[in-house]
Length: 404
Image (cartoon, rainbow, N blue to C red; front, side):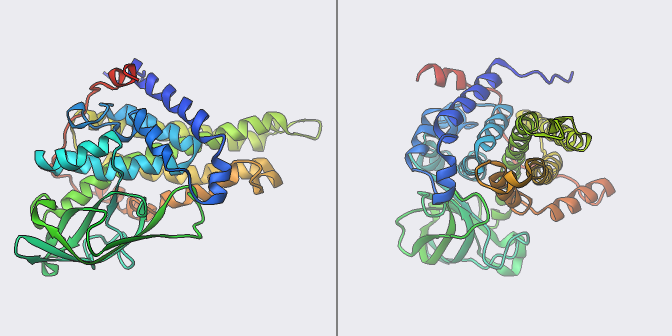
């Protein structure tokens, strides 16, 4: 049976995220966007709400949301600003959920629990100066040295790079093996040879930190390796499935924000003696915006349902990410068109929406990559193989909130 109704917990998460955005983000986001960052204490407030361990089970310090609630959280945060959804994508989706699936119990106690509680911030280091979509051909290397590895290389375009405490990074232990030679490691800030820096001059997501990670002969003990040697590419791809899910959900929120702003403006602005919402070509843009947003939301929810069952969802998540991010860009373009000259000014939020929207059609797999993925599934050239996947039914976020 297909049921599109939200549970009581889903609605509680939705309202909590909206309240958080209204109180903590929206009154300040224009200034943070201009200044290039938001205060670090916001992470603590997100942790208090259970957001930094959203879908992580209570056993490992999380607040136990199911995947649909997690999607709703990402949608509502990006409806306020993309920088806050990025925290969910990187800290939770790419890092913490990868540890949940692949780390040993000892590793989870050491790194996942403090991350889920919000005591430590985490990021994910795969992209390099010369490596993006072609993630199997990493330049970073990990050479065995007794009971440790020596890591060398650089990671670029890493969200939270300059403020994270933990780094899930990927390096090649044997380049002759291609993707089978990639290995995953959990690094901690303060390790000798590990340094980070921030990137400036970004088109969008200016309120969020983006930077680089330098690995200069970093000695990494063997117990910091996640999974087996040579298993890193599988870990990275399963993590990216989670990251894509959060990006798709967030893009729905950004498109919804574009629609909200455009509907309000279409009722307020008058031309030729009537509200511009009465003009058919404006209605056409609004209708397409509304329809595409609903389509994206349903695609995300379908992927979330599969995740809640512990089922492989690479195809469905890819489709949701592809549609939702492309639609968000078009929605932002149409929102500016509806606002006319005012849309070109930061007096109105739609210019920020456009700047923020563009990154998502690049990271977590470009739109061109997702086009190929969907075509190959349709043609039968691609099929899914099982990966470790843990079902996450609702586990206790209501109890978490009751304790606040």
